[in-house]
Length: 378
Image (cartoon, rainbow, N blue to C red; front, top):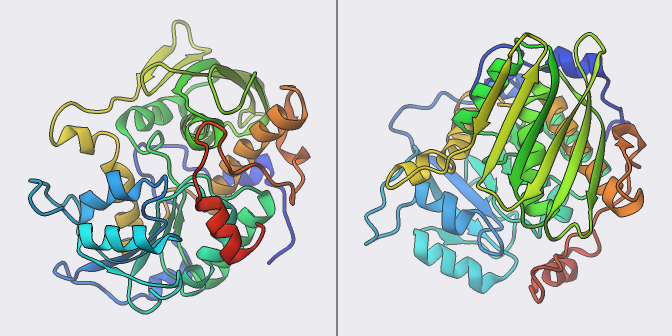
């Protein structure tokens, strides 16, 4: 792994696509351009990790690729899940039976059998640097569901593996990949922002609060305004309400602030105030009503972004942007856990400091103990 390098405002702005909206392609990973050309009729084989235990795969993403018999579902992608793994082998076998794929006994048994990897779980994130290592080293595209990790060092380790071996990675939230936030980013990129305030539907910080954090990073930070510090004030990080304040610097070094209210209200909203007279815009994430919009408005865009990345080798976010939003997430943790809600600068978070993984609001889940038993302490 290369030495830890803090992200400067200049390097972040230099890598940030300022104009445009939607899935904006970052620079292709050089080694990925050597991949064989695929024909439209070729099936892109997906291997899935962490498929069932508090996972997006079983209820949300897998049906978009492998429609379940007798449900009336249709495929929304050109990809098919062919293999799967879960720390609980019985859950893995059930997933395989439901979606018509093969369950493998070991997490790295899909090497040579798949063209890309999707990891859908939450509890696995302290071990993502282990679970994804063989696939990153093989140069495959990897979708790693949020959070990326529970430390900065492990997140950087995965990014450096991807850089070295020509792998592409996507670390998504559905609150990034949707039309509302694409429009917000496009509008913000042409403005001098005074402030903003946002809301996010909250459950606990690492599984749902992170949606709002990623939303802010996508719409505001990637429009040319990286985050400098984060404060997070709440009585409990695993229950609402809470409020986060983000300090930004724009491309001219000017400071401004925004707030994110972690509450139970819809999905996500964002109101941006710019310097221009009466320059205020509202953006609201919609879940979609009825088939197929209940899938295409919120859940399918993430998988479409992965497919585009996998087929063309172009990442929707640069490595620097992925690391930046992880630093923002970790600074929020540092604020609520050790700083009493006071602002924490991104570069004040120790690289090896680790955050909690078990959820007090979801007691009794055995997944963490199973992962610890197999892979040791994170």
